[in-house]
Length: 164
Image (tube, rainbow, N blue to C red; front, side, top):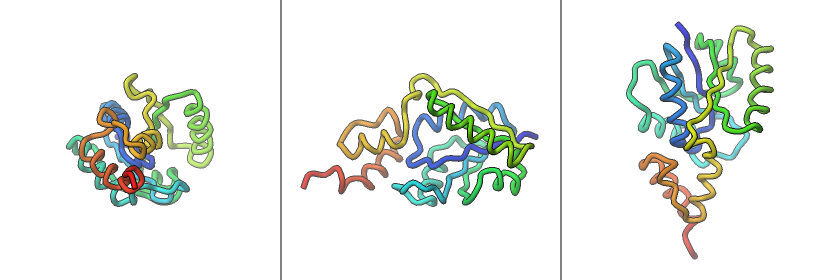
C-alpha cells in the first residue's frame, strides 16, 4: 500500500490544489492533504479553517483524508506510515526549491520519496498569494477558487478591499 501526503499552506485552497489532488488520487492507495500549521508565513485563515475548507471542497473518497500538522513533513510521514510526498511544480523556480527540499527530506528520511506532479495548464500560474492580492484589489477570482472558498476569502479580506 502506497500512502502519500500533500503538504501545504492552502491559504486559501485553489482550483489548482484541487486539480493536483484529483490527478494524484489514482497514483496512491491513500492521500493525506496536510495543512502546515506552523508556517513562517502570516496566514489569512487559521489551520482549522483551512482544514474545514478543504473538507468542504474535496471529493468524497475513502482514500482521501485532511489534517493539519506541525513540524517537519518527514517526521509527520514517519509517524503516520506515509511513504511519499506529493508536490506540485508550476515553474522552474518552484522546481529548484522543491528539488532542494526533496533531497533534504531524502537525507533525513531515505525511505520517503517525493513525487512531482505538473499542474494542468489552466492552473499553471495560480498561487494563493496571487489570488489574495487580486481579492484585496476587488478583482474576479471565480475561475481560481471554489465558490464557498471565494466567499470566505472575500469576507476575510473585505476590510482591506472596501473603500473607506
